[in-house]
Image 1: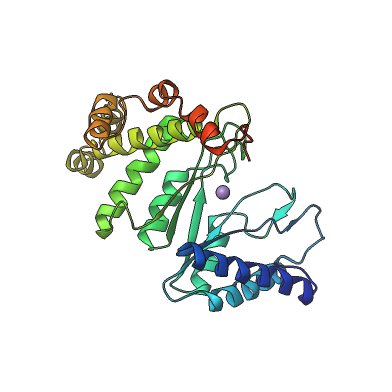
Image 2: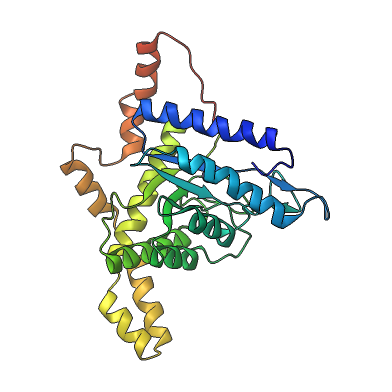
Length: 285
Ligand SMILES: [Mn+2]
């Protein structure tokens, strides 16, 4: 997308426009773009030219978007390149999304940050600016590990949901539809369906806990500079076991009390394999 050769850039642009055409057939409403473009050594790239070429390419794709579509610009600090990534952080993504226009916004993949990055703060500010596209949920210990949501740092997940709920309410946004909710994980040691069930469960738990935060009390604590009380309020919500509540809601909606257990008892995988008449294996792709 940022290649020095315009003909190469054109190939990447045309590929994205082709993807939009398939998306229309599938009933999609958004194009999610993650670019691996970057450099491995100092001096390899002119950063400004790389950014401007990327912007130009994205502008062409933006022009090809149907009226009711959005384009989501995903960032990532390193890998596959190890010196620079042309859309390396939320600032660079936000800059592109701002220059592109109202249909463009910034996609947050939880694994696409350097260690220690305060993701919830990024979420809060993107929401404030109306530029949060949505999420690629996963979890990580080191980098873009693509582990199951909530498997490593569930407190961070809760803090992100806390900012989401607070920020969406402040803007009067619909929790269910205002942003894109996606899971971007990759596993080859688990049944991928069980992994998805665990991910959805982790998301429901973090969301329910965030809804429990006493916002009025938190605002009062913040106004009074009562730091200990602010922490008490957040952790009171986080340490509440919301699993019975979620199980009850799941049952009321025709779901299972314990999704993974039900999936195993009902032999869903075996039955699906029989239905297909094929032997299938978990690929984790
Ligand atoms: Mn992703």
